Structure formats: C-alpha cells, structure tokens
Amino acid sequence: LTRSSGEGRSERPVIAIHAGAGDHGAELRGHEDECHAALLEALESARTALDQGLDATHAVQAAIVVMENFELFNAGRGATLCSDGAVEMSAALMRGSDRAAGAVAVVHHTENPILGARAVLDSPQVLVVGVPADELAAQAGVPQLPNEHFITERQRERLRDAAAELDRATVGAVCLDGEGLLAAGTSTGGIRGQPPGRVGDCPVIGAGTWADGHAAISCTGDGEAFIRCTAARHVAALVERGASVDAAAAQALQLVAELKFTGGLIAVDGEGNVALPYITSVMPRGLWRAGREPTTWVL
Ligand code: ASP
Image 1 (cartoon, rainbow, N blue to C red):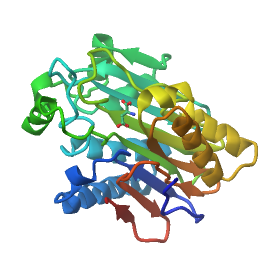
Image 2: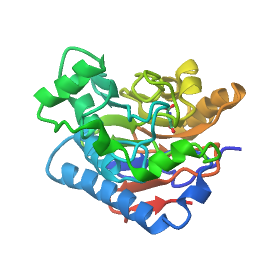
Image 3: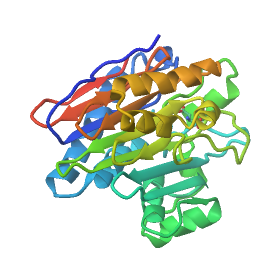
Image 4: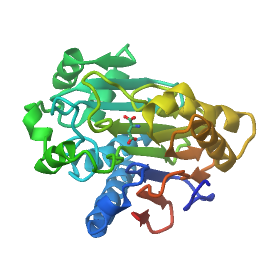
C-alpha cells in the first residue's frame, strides 16, 4: 500500500518537506500542534528565501535548518542517539541544474549539518566525513557546539527503552524555484542505537538525496534498503524516461518493500508535479505552491 497526499501540479515555485516516514504515530500524538507549527515555519522560511531572490538550494537549506532546530525531529539538536549515547549527524544538498552535490556524515559538532553540506557543495568534494567535515563547516562559519548540545533527555530515555518505536523523524526538502531550478536536501541523526560510524542513505547521493534536471527527491526510512535500491536516483531516472513522478516514486518504494523494508519520499519534477508517498503509517509533511496556502500533515 502506498499512501500519498498533496500531490498534483501547479505553478512554480513549489516546496515540499518531510519529517520522517515511520510507525511512530503514538510518539507524535499529543505533539501535533508543535509539529504542524515547525513544518509551517520550515515552509515559510523556504518561501522567504525564494522571495529574497535566492535559488532552490537556499530554499531547501532554509527549510531544513528550521526542522533541524526543532527538537522533536531526528536531525540537529534532539536527534536520535547512537549505541554509545552520542549524536552523529549526516546531511546532503544537491542542485539539479549541474548536479552539484555536497554531503557530510558522522558530524558531532556542526549546529546545522545541512549548512555543512552546503559548504561541501561549494567545495570540489562531494562527501566529507567525521572531524574534517565539522572543520569544513566551521571554516564556512557554521557554529560548532559540544556534542552534549544535541543530546536531549527525551532521546536518552528512548535509548534506554528498548521498546520505544524507532525514531523516524529524519527531515528533508525538495524545491522547484521560479527559474525552474530543482534542488533536494536531507538531514538525519540516523537510527536509534546505531553503532558509531554507521551511515544511512541520507548523505549518499543517489540513495537518500538526488536532484537533476528532471526531478528532486529526498528519502526517509530504512537507510540500508534505500542505498541498496539507489532509490532517489531511481525516481529521477524513471521521470527522465517519461514516467509520472507519482508512478516513479511508487516504483522506488516498491523496490524498498521488495527488500522487506519501509520508508517514504518526497519528489518534485521540472513541471511542479509533486509526490509525497510513504509505505509506513505516518510521514509528517508539508507542501507550498505559488498562489496557494501552505498545507501540513502530521498524523
Ligand atoms: N533514512 C535514515 C537512516 O537510515 C533514517 C530515517 O529516515 O528515519 O539513517
């Protein structure tokens, strides 16, 4: 079963965001208002970037910064903890026009990992990991904080509680701007209890994050499966060959399901068609299109 909502076609620009596909509905219940507010703020921040004349990559990073700063989402402060109790974060940003891409993984100190990914995108490299990734972000002016800053009591308790649902609140954004430029970004703390050094799909270009001239995609879910399916790139390749973004997105999730894993994704094509499918029970998400009111969904 592929659930979906908010899809359709419209004038550009268009911005779509997600805050993780999973079965963590019980975890979100009681926090719906805060989540809606954070999603709306993220859409608003992206829109402000576009209003200021910035391009789709800036809109994507603006939306993700807001979601990284929101403690109930699994990115930035409040991210899920590794088995050793530390937070390790990853993020990626990709521009469709020239496939410029930047990603960081296993960062411990960078306040907003998506801004670290931006610094890599602006460098000759594509993926930088560990201490040098934090250092590169620092050189680009991104504040560096002790790892304890990112660790919340809520996540400490969840690490202790083996029965707690997996944290599926990775965040992502895709945008088609007024000039027709596509961009995608994703940011995560990974999966609760992951061994230190484990990296999921989020910073793996083509797996969790992808943008080219045809589509921009950000994925969430069981990262290993999304890597094994190169899920994000798969969506864009199908769109390039003439599939609708809906059909392409559903097919990528089908590949993930065939491996017996789950997740969701958001995708926008060069005409502003959007797909927001997920094969889990929830995927908080939001959509704003030119000339319309922003819409958010939590449960
Ligand atoms: N895809 C992320 C990872 O595997 C987790 C998630 O989306 O919840 O690290």
